[in-house]
Image (cartoon, rainbow, N blue to C red; front, top):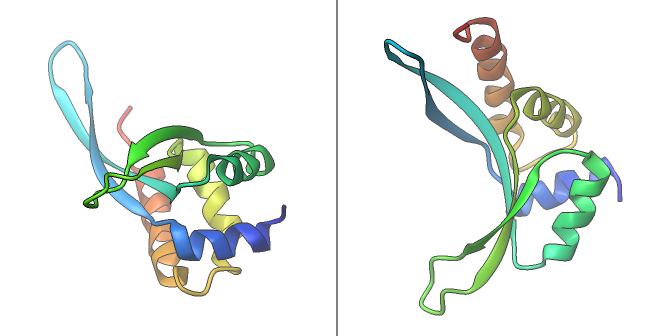
Length: 117
């Protein structure tokens, strides 16, 4: 297992996901953007090997939206410092998702600089 393999795997099976999350304190709800990098596959073992190598993310069971509702798994990297490291490792290696990773890197830097207290 190495970062080149993971980059190729991510190019085919992964995506960059930008979402709004919220934090509720005693007086108000605050919305803020977050970035995650999920990788979907039907083979849990390969996702476990990737997770072990990169030492980040969690694996969850999911179902693919199809007529057969096939079971699959998703490795989600969502802690912002982990996403930053993951993007840094893949940016120069990915071909298909290079632009998405570059935009995510810029967005993540902005988010981390302006995140709520």
